[in-house]
Image 1 (cartoon, one colour):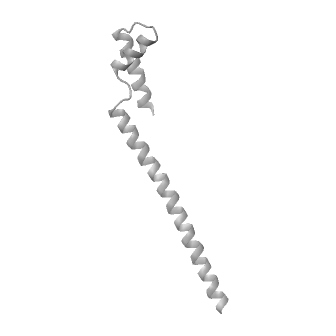
Image 2 (image 1 turned 30 degrees about the vertical axis):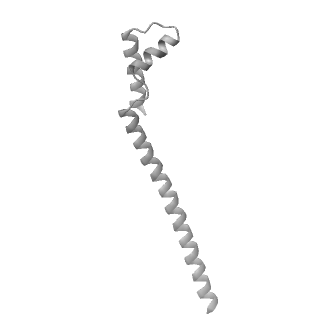
Image 3 (image 1 turned 135 degrees about the horizontal axis):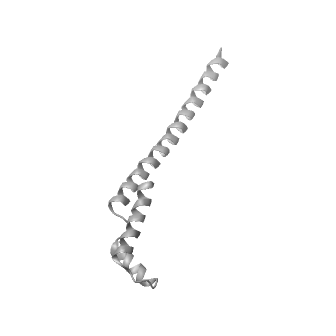
Length: 84
């Protein structure tokens, strides 16, 4: 009779460990997706590159930046951000 009670204890222990591991993995996955969503919204509101930075980069590369080229590049970059 005592062996049966001991087996029950180990089953409860394994079940507790399994639930802890599943909860931990679920928390990690949920945290990842929440952080990803937050960063995507942050980058959409605060783009890492702006018109002035593009002008400077183009001038450093030896190109003469026209407003049309800058607008095209900004539109292309924003399009890439929207796809993600």
